[in-house]
Length: 303
Image (cartoon, rainbow, N blue to C red):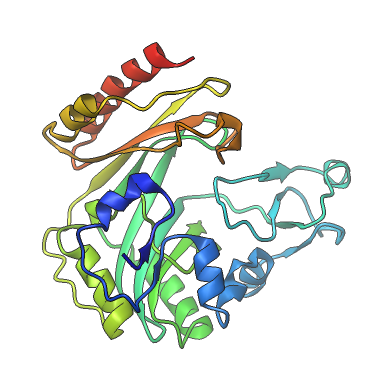
């Protein structure tokens, strides 16, 4: 299956879709970095900021003003690793870290957008917003059915200018309408919420270099996340429980998002919690009810 998925809990979205053996579709930034050498510069977050006229620089170059946002220049693992606000010159000097950067602190709506791009022209968009809880954790993500004309215009113009030869999915993260990160791959957490036939359209995009997706079943979806405390050893729920959750009305899919045979500290997780499961649903209340069923299992079974 050339849709190259590193997380076994997400293979469910792709394993039943035919894909030619010579077509590779990335879901991981490391694969995209290797496969698109002409475009891999987008993983340099300083370059992304400067391409929009935003203040940015590596640690060691003094910011002209504070506060600023600090993070690794390149982070192919995500999860907001080592990201923080630096409020003063003194805090900045105390936090200097090789390989890190600062940029203008943006405030406003944080949106993750997937775009299907053919030769630098976006042909399809979906926008997602998260409901944050604490320290990098989220209660849920909303996959919006509605378009976002401002983001689509701004980001579409940026794509046409900076990625004119690129064909594939681009994921862009923006705050207050300005791009903070670009990924040469899709968001693989919720492809089932994009509607029936979307994965088949994805394969055609990479195989035929064309976008053909009717998008007639477009509706709001929700990706509801379950976090547990760090420092415990969790066990996978029994198959019967997972099947019961999957068949709850309004639920689309369930992911158990950790490796049971891997030490907990070796998982890339945000400071605020250990991500245990994700429930994708077309009804938020149903997704939350499913999460509570799973929470009961994990709280009882954790070592």
